[in-house]
Image 1: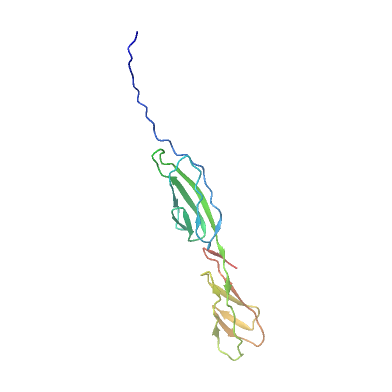
Image 2 (image 1 turned 180 degrees about the vertical axis):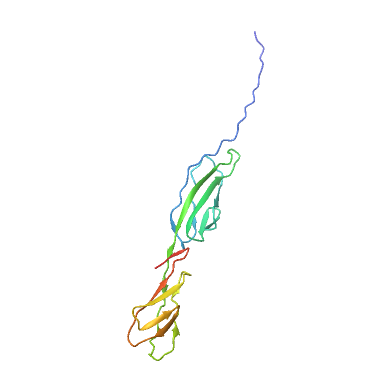
Length: 170
C-alpha cells in the first residue's frame, strides 16, 4: 500500500498581448465641428489614446477638433490593463478638405464722372483670402481696391477671393 503524498507545481499566468484592428477616419471639411473617433475593436478593455502627427487637429480623449485643412496621421495606442499588455501603435490618416468660402455684402455705390477715385469695401467672407477686383470694361480702372472713373456708363465689378490653406478659391 501507498501513503498519500502531494506534489506542487507553479502555474504562472502572464498578461496577454493586446490585439486590435486597424481603424479608419472619415473625410472631413475645414469648418466642421468636433467629432469622435470610433475606437478599433480589441481583445482588451484598455483605454485608447490618440496622438496627431501635426497641429491640423487637436485631440481630447477621443474627440478630434479640426484646426486646418490637409492630411494628418492619427496614432492609436491601447493602454495596459491588469490582464493585457499595452498595444503597439496603429495609424489612420485623416483627410480634411479645404472649405468653400462664402462671401456676401458686396455692393458699389453709384458715382458721377467727376468724382474722385474711391476705395471698394471688401465683401464679408468666412475666409481670410485676399480679394482682387476686375472691371467688365474700361469705364473704370482698378488698382488694388481703388476705382478710378474713366467714362460714363455701366460696368460690372467682380471680386475674386484667393485660396488659402483652409479655403478654396472661387
